[in-house]
Every structure is written in structure tokens, then in C-alpha cells.
Image (cartoon, rainbow, N blue to C red):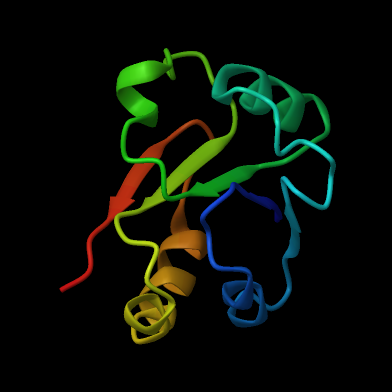
Length: 106
């Protein structure tokens, strides 16, 4: 799966997603794109999943016709995310195109 990490998604998480191509918005030169433009550009470039920490994305964007899956990590804390990498891997493996999922951390 081709995955794009938005700003705020901890880059070390990519090591825990083997078998996937993981890029960051920064690496692609897209860090200045607004969310709607980022989603459109990512879909045009063949990304299948956007991983973000933007909790407001679903309120700010119409996601109804998106083909790319979106996963929202409900924290930016790498130590908290690191403890849940198995769960994140399972969610990524099972996610369907065009769906939206939030991952909460205790």
C-alpha cells in the first residue's frame, strides 16, 4: 500500500509498516498544501492511505467522495503511538479504500 504521512505523524512509525511504501508530505514538498489540496494531490499520485494527526480533518473537508483511506492518530506522542504499533499495523492491513478511522490512545 502507498501511504502518505501528513505533518505531525511521527516519522519513526514508518519502520513499523513493512511491506508498504511510506512517504511524508514534507518529503514530497507538500507541507505547505492545505488539507483539501493535499488530499487531492495525494490521490492523484496514487496514495491509498493518508495517516494524519489532524483531528479536525473530517469537519473541515468533505470526505464523502475520497478514494483514499484516512487514518487519524489521536495523539502526536511517539512514545504513546510506539506502544500501539501492532494495533496500527492491523488497522492499516484491514482498512478499505475511501474509509475514515480514528485511533485513540490511552
